[in-house]
Image (cartoon, rainbow, N blue to C red; front, side, top):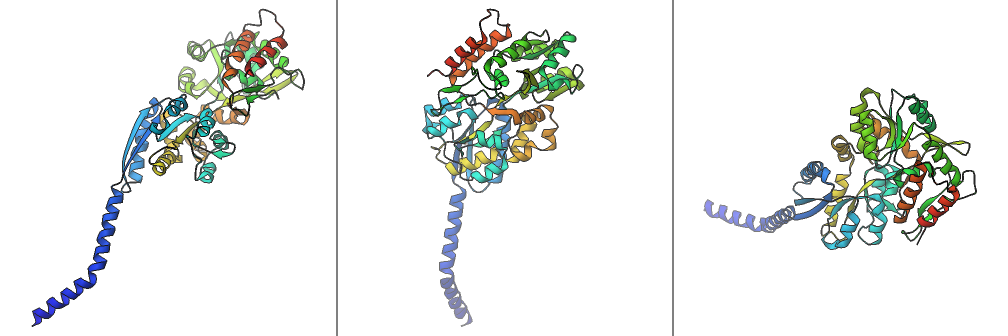
Length: 412
């Protein structure tokens, strides 16, 4: 009798628990199904970044373990021509990709990038210049990655005082007295911008995003185009100056003939090895022009991470892009690759600030401007500057040369 009562009670209990047990089983199956979701992401990055990115992918997968099964594929792709490759086949392009900031407007216009959803958070975490570089008309379209694509002054402390490095003219005089050279590449319009950028003379893109505006031939104002040209001729005339390509500059540093020069972070390790305890880096100096001492300008640039608007996994792609560019991974990038962070905290960390090259670049950032020029800027400026470096041997008027330069730069 007792056994029958027990079985009856058990049957009733199971009937009462049945719906709840089924729901729990369904929830478990759903959770398992979600956890088993396969997320495939393709990432384009610089060939030199492969080891770094693999570490970042591993930490990303650990952080999101259990939420999906990730299959992340890395493919080497130069940041400098990422735009052209991606726009060739957007739907089959990478989900996440690194690119140079001067491509952001074209990528956004082509529909390859959507505005960043958590823009306020990304803006707050990164340097204002890097945020500007990642934006188009005030709208953030990419995640800032680095803020180190610029140039500054390297100098050998055995030849220059802290006062000397404030003036390019003073530096060339000191170098000449020592039988050495201060170098700068006047065969590159990228560097030549340094003389015009803070004079009130302008160059930049028109609203079409293709053609340029330029006033470097202006004959009015406190600083005229011919004033800058004459200042360059005066510098070139010093026996302590040499116009050298980046490679020749580094060779001169290593053989002792060059004791200062303008370059970027990519040469920091080699220059420090050559100069040892005399290694120094600082913002660019001023130069004498039209009776003034004008602070040299610089072009600046950043590397960015974009998310393909055609990605099959846009939410996960955005999470990965944000992970690649977060504070911890920008600090890791600095330690492994020596690249200057765009993240505010990473840029201001003791480790980053201890790097003379990065500190110099950050000091120069106050006088730098984003590189926003069309393709017709480069050759005319190079031709003009190379003639200045030779001392204008033909004697052609500086105004005529600047008029020709401006006409070519602004050609449609």
